[in-house]
Length: 284
Image 1: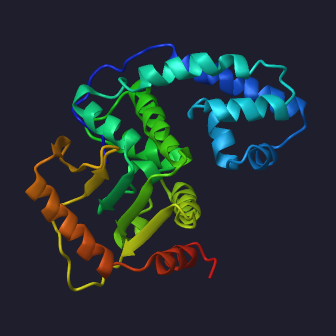
Image 2 (image 1 turned 180 degrees about the vertical axis):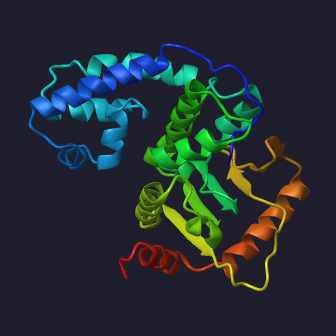
């Protein structure tokens, strides 16, 4: 999912400022409580990287987190008081994506099943902040810095879907070449592999790698996404050279679903895929 249409001026609103200010408050309260990001993450039932992202203002603190953090950090209601503002900002966020992308973004945010096949880059939902920034910084024609940062923030905000419960069904098939391409340099690449490893170990996520040495392949037409909406309707999304297409025709969706099923049988199993990433990181 590239979200890389021809450039338009970045939208400016108070949402980013709200999350930045709230993140700074969380950091100050955490440090005053003599807690590390990891300790707060464990106590609040979330990851250390999520705490870091919230403190930097690139991830939205969810209302249930604000309730828990307010108590854990003895904030005296300061964080709870921000809940209504956060909810209002989230409503605005649903329309911050480019017009051409909004139908898909709404479907993704509410989907009960999401299945991704990617052959060029790590899917947006699985990208680290540094990897996403490298992707947008390297795009041609070049984007200005303000737009790059907005795109990164918007992309990371989509990852809140992993925090939903009950969780949607997630599956990802990544070509092995994606794991070998060091987008952003060695450090960024290692961080991205570590995030894939962590997400691949989640019981809500099935991550599979398609080996490069396979001599059969059911689809050479590029990446695609399959989503099942909350109304249990399945659609497909494809994007070629920045031109998106949301596919709702039943027969077209069936054909793409068939290809995805074959891909899953040809790719490494989830446990084998995790082992491969561990080997790439030198952990095996």
